[in-house]
Image (tube, rainbow, N blue to C red; front, side):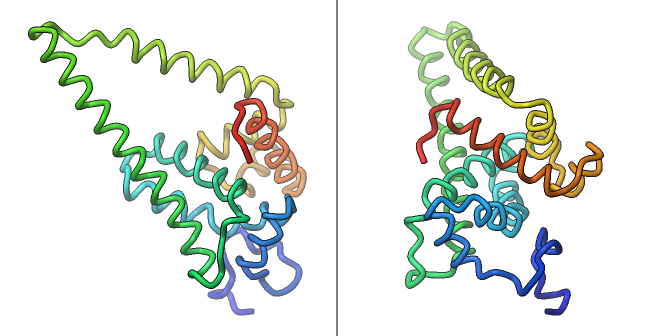
Length: 197
């Protein structure tokens, strides 16, 4: 395989690059190693697409993570006859990004209506702030259930934007260990947050 055919994160593959569609089929059967490969292959493209839609790196990281959880949970819905695996993954990511834009716009309209119906009084943001803080606290509590290595790896990858290799280097930990801990940590977070597979 020449270097142009190799996808990001695929340098560790021993043989020819696995077909993404096959990896999705294996992921649908609960194969976590297959999902790890899917993640390696598509996460840069997912983040890039989401960032182009949202233009906010912090929100883009969050939405990209949600999209990748959707891939993990919904791999069984991928139908090869309807298009390429990468297109399916990027469609999920695009939908997530568009949903976030629409939610932000709807929140802005609600704020305007509330302000107008209050006779011009300033909009009270207490409820919105309390809700955001409660959601943030829930995520923080779930992050605290992770082991120290899982916690550090997840924070560096999702909040710091580092690749697996960069995380492994920063933590002075073997790449395979970082990938395993990251996968286990994401599964534990999914379960803690009550996200259905």
